Length: 341
Image (cartoon, rainbow, N blue to C red; front, side, top):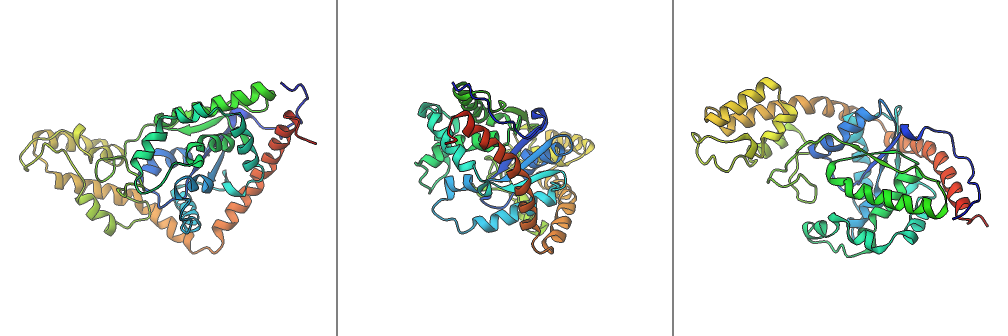
């Protein structure tokens, strides 16, 4: 272990900094909002928050066709802003524009045991679920290494994740501990900021995902959303209108938990259990809730789309803020590893 003092880093309170990112691989859906963005909007009010567009992570699955990434970047940032992210309160930047990130990823790949990556619980699961793409590459296997570089180059303490992502973050913590044990305490160990559980099943009952093409997207009009909701799966036991159902077995009811009022949920639950309310009635209430929820997002998104160069300016300003800090981090890394020749 090196005993050479590392250069001082830009002063910041590590317990106040949080970081998260999202891949630009397609339009954002309700699962993205309730599973991540809603939490981000709240987080920017209380923490020093960094949010990045993970365009390199998008290459892990979309490396063969990169033609849509630029459009997805702009559209995703528009969705973020429309949903409430504020570039005056948080730092928003493009992952691939950060100098030193690829270097840190390379360094971490040298010290990460292969077995740690192979045991990642979602590695084989995603290979099986994402059809039509060859995911047998290092980028897909090694994405937790790049994820770790994303986190620790920012010296972020908090990483907002759902419970299903805790194994990924634990791997990042192990890689961080290994670096610090080899070269000195350069990085704070990242910790989870658990995102409140929000169940957002897809139209077909599976997890809502762009890969499964089963989502309700934030930018869609109600004219586009209505037939999707009309066709959503409900309780399979309700074969006829007068058959009683169970909201716990219904693919639709989790959205009432998110979008309907307590009084509406009480009415829906009682009506489903007694068969006094049909699935069509239940879907009509949900459509009203969706219309009310999406209206301000659509209004803000429409206004933002008319501002030329907005996304470019926001990403440039975020990059400038992030790069000042990240350059100091990399200087500390090179010093600790005695790589400053």
